[in-house]
Image (cartoon, rainbow, N blue to C red):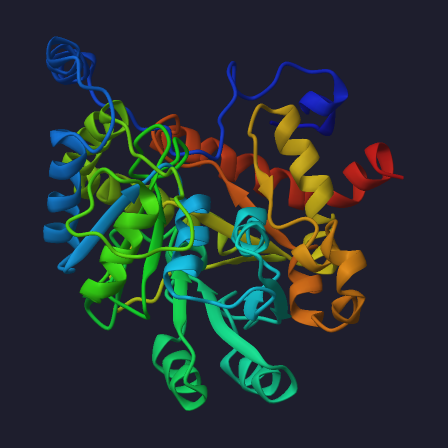
Length: 400
């Protein structure tokens, strides 16, 4: 690209013929897919905790080195069931970040709970333990829900100390964090329980689905009973049936995905390294890096855009990339404290989360995963570098 007139926003052909999404979108080979699904159809057993769902739970327990893995329909339901299994009281208050996917907070609402929105660390984008401590003194809180954002673990030790000091459970939304570790131990082993997502956009996917992990056998049995009458190991009294069955089709796809997980992490690692190498020298771009001592899945290539240094806003860059068929995503816009119904129900948080509000204007996720080749990564980076080098002319011409 030699001139801003060559930008797709100016009517030129886009950089890529087809769109590059941020979702991982990894799939097994058609041969492996057909093999497991022929077996499924031959057996004619499609749900109610069949042998494939049981096998996936066993494999996850082995991979994560955790006592119990309970697969469920999706991660949102998994979070709601966790709230019920933990015995959190109706209208109980739960500390949670506003800088998260909507389902994290909506799961609390489905469980009859109220969010207490907490600000986050500017460095990790996770719950700030000091701000959690302050909220614990200001509110009658029944639990803390952390989010391992981008697969980077929360400060688990500090959060657990705070939870223990109040005698309340700590649990985690680990939707981003399969195959990630904290101090060398797999995510899935911390707090009362942790909830993973197997949505189609995740590095390990079952086309849809989720999993709750815990080392508490009694909690696991309550979760199994809440999920459905199938798959329970003994009858336990529960307040509700969650209808959270995990189908054999989901399990078949999930097992294939789990087999490929390590290779996918390695591929993502290479792409992230190339992104960071080429973008870190561009003014106004800060790459969010995983903790160097921890194993990660590298599925989220996340940037912070400093508008003053870069020359354009995050939203302008996103619009330019979208025109080139690079479907970068703004995260999270707006923060959950500014989303209905929470902005009306809890107006006290409107100006209480300055770090969250600032990051909502800066954070951009770039495509990675199966649809994105190493060559595509290089071309995306070259496009961003061109945009920054010509930001004054682009702003004057297209964003005045």
